[in-house]
Image (tube, rainbow, N blue to C red):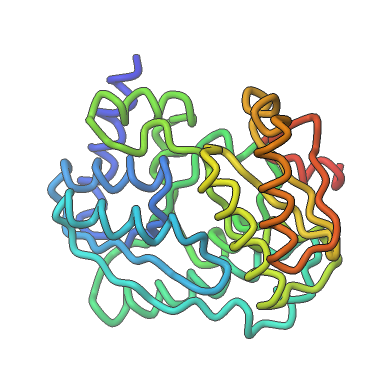
Length: 266
């Protein structure tokens, strides 16, 4: 059944003939990138980077486009120039995606591609995703949704295809670390980026630093919470995160859980 879905995906892509892919370097868009490569259609992957982009995302995009030998374009994201995005209400992601897809539509029309596609999956349909509205407005297709593929299925297929992203943790933009209603600033994004780099350097695989400035709230996976409670490591982490501009560092004992910030929306 899973192979049937993959076959359906490849056939959907072949029918498109050509497409622009909104490529982030994550599990889903990398799987779609590989499927597009296998389908033989004409396509180009486009990655938007800005101060909201996690540094690891840029590194893995550069690695994968080289390994998979695909045509790729970096563009500069301009979401921080939009007051609607910066004010950080619960529709923040709409304005980011609206700007991204407007850029991709311009590229599509200028270069003569037939479609714009993204890596949304059927799991995304059940979470709060205002960016989906932007995709609908700009006529963006989601082949993984059309093929009925969910995230766990995509991870399984990615592993079979030998993709290094098959077990990569989700990596949303850094603005997702700032609570709704708190203005997004370059200074806040820089604090978060530096603080998360502290945790990653300490060996933690899944990390989030929620910016309740001047307090930093740390989230790591539930499996790694015991590690951070080691006294010497904890003291080192606190000292280094405070050097990023925080006065207080707290640990979320629930641990990281995807979509946690959206739970307050209801």
